[in-house]
Image (tube, rainbow, N blue to C red; front, side, top):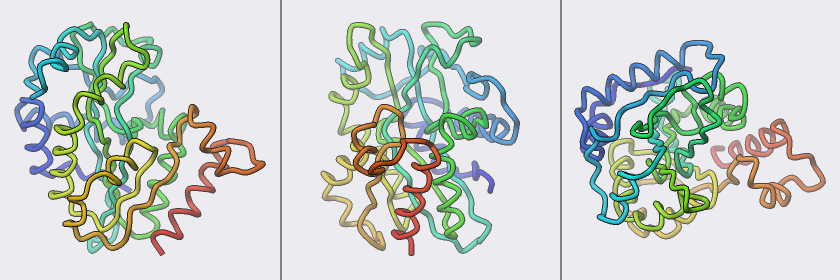
Length: 263
């Protein structure tokens, strides 16, 4: 299973959205692919810092102020996992946002002006794929095993830290549903997935409330699955009746649901 990092349309889409050069986005993807192919031992490895003053993201005035004054910003670039079959169609796996914890970067001397670039669920890093986010990676592998490519992205591509808000990302999302929705629909136009699988309520609500999706040639209705995060205990309690909320049980549950959906 390998990454496809040569989609010029995706490079240009995100370059335009963030006010960056498409060559820079492509360079980021090359670095992320290099990280993907390495054995990483630290949580900060594989992430790319870039000073926020060089970004020209098109945001409404209120949220622009939060971007400029935030002390930590996270941006996720989507990843495309290739199935060996050249004729394979694509499943779009959609999550929530690029949450960043300072504790995840204990050895990374980032500045307050840095934007930390990564990927959904840090799937470019073996540290996360084999650790905290192995439930997600197992789901990706399972979709690949069903003979599909996987394109994994977030509804919201930016996360901002604002110390006066808890949790901080809710403020950003509240003010920017339209612009991020348009970006996600542009991704749909480029990737043209056969199916969409949503991880968590945020993704589910976006697609449930987006009537324009009826214009896309999806083979069946979207599959809504619980977010794999450890904070989602109430939902997982309903899914894993009388079972421990272990990664192994979550993986088994998601595999069963995905297999049934893709069958």
